[in-house]
Length: 356
Image (cartoon, rainbow, N blue to C red; front, side, top):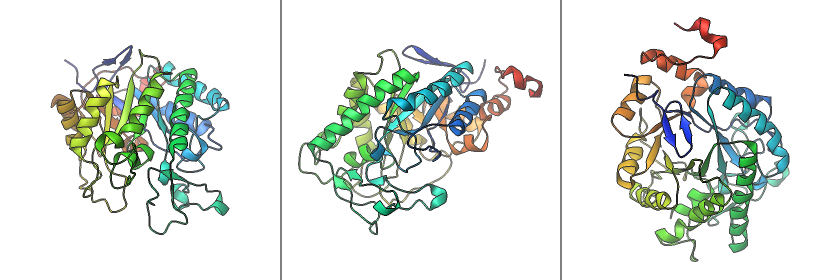
């Protein structure tokens, strides 16, 4: 009897060889949205390292959707060629290539972390940001985000749709819509960042509207036999913000709409959040959504050990385990975890002589 962590999971027409997912992690290493050899090696090494699913970092659906000028993009056809090469390699390693489509909203136009993660003004190569409402992330920012009008909202929706067409052409087999971490869709979801009085603000039904419209637009281009994921922040960790009960409610609706799995994270919306961080601190949210919305979930957040991941699956708290920083520390994390769990898994033949 093998471990749960290394058991396969089938969603629609895709079978993941194990439950280990490489979480989308920004590399801040692109130019004009183009992937390069850094992305090939970064993503490819995690595929050869044994992960079942590799989700590419937040990939912008338009230039203004980028977090930083160095983010990956998929807003033009020219981006596709390099992404195809990366995906071919991932598939050659018996792993599944996925992508996270994103719009940063008011959190856009900042420098890379090693350049200070500072809001860029127009003289520094920055650009006008947009949001649900004209509320800045930090009070001292050089300009306010613009509240999207109806035309702007329609542009965002059509950008996601056009990006999805390119995602299909580039050979991705899983698509994740980014609705978490304080980026644009999350800015609409939460009353802390959405004080609109039109059909996109106020009630729960109005605040979730753009997310549902984007899901529907994506589904017009995304094959029905491939998995569709939505990532959400289950709570804002702030008073009067988006909360776990609303997350369950949204997840039920997303399931009805044909979404296959909820990637459950938290926080990132407001600078005054107060997070109780500890090992597996977000797992209870994944469990709550899985049980109350009756939908597959992915758990993420300070999951660093094989036995910890195995326990989450054995307890029925989630269906997939996503690894971010731990996989940065160790690209071969699945190979090590298999050893820790006494599972005999396939290694790349080039590495077999190191297998214990």
